[in-house]
Amino acid sequence: MARNNEIPEVNAGSMADIAFLLLIFFLVTTTIQTDVGIDRKLPPKDTTPPVQIPEKNIFRVSLNKNNELFVEDDLLPVEELRKVAIAFLDNGGAKQNDDGYCNYCKGERNSKSSDSPTDAIIAFNSDREASYGSYVEVQNELTAAYNALRNREAQRLFNKDFVDMEKNYYDAKTPIDVKQELKKQIKQIRDMYPMKLSEAQTTFNL
Image (cartoon, rainbow, N blue to C red; front, side):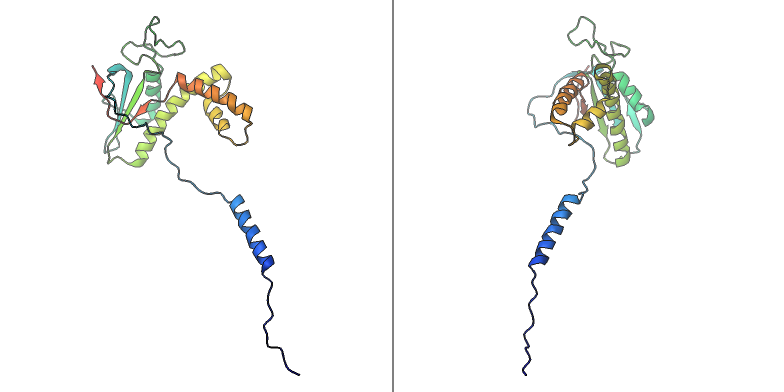
């Protein structure tokens, strides 16, 4: 009796289906790691002449190559940066009859400091040889100063923190109608304390 030397075929159709299902499962369940950095939106290219800004509306912060922090040419520990930045942003030095008067500011209203939060600009300059860790630490303290003031006004107006409002707005589980209301509230707070943090060279008007 002759033997059949033919190799039996394996049906791979079901294996292809299983591989396809495993691929879909991998794509759905895998979390892709993203780089973490400083959240900043670059300004659009502008060819207009530089704007002359009064000296009192500029809060100058600099970091030298030795990671020493200077605020208005005075050496300052980074732990105190948030406090002095808040005092500058919330000063409200404009007179009550002026158009730029800030009726929600709770600062000292020093006429030699910023007129209002909408006029106040923080100019930050970092030496190229400064460490990245020190640079990020300064950026975090300046951002925290803005968030502290925004939280205060959000609590006063909406009984919730501004940072929580932003977190809920970007949460995919938040309903659309809630997001629309949060968008209006977030814009209102941002308009009250706009983040004007510049790393460009600033022209001072003495």
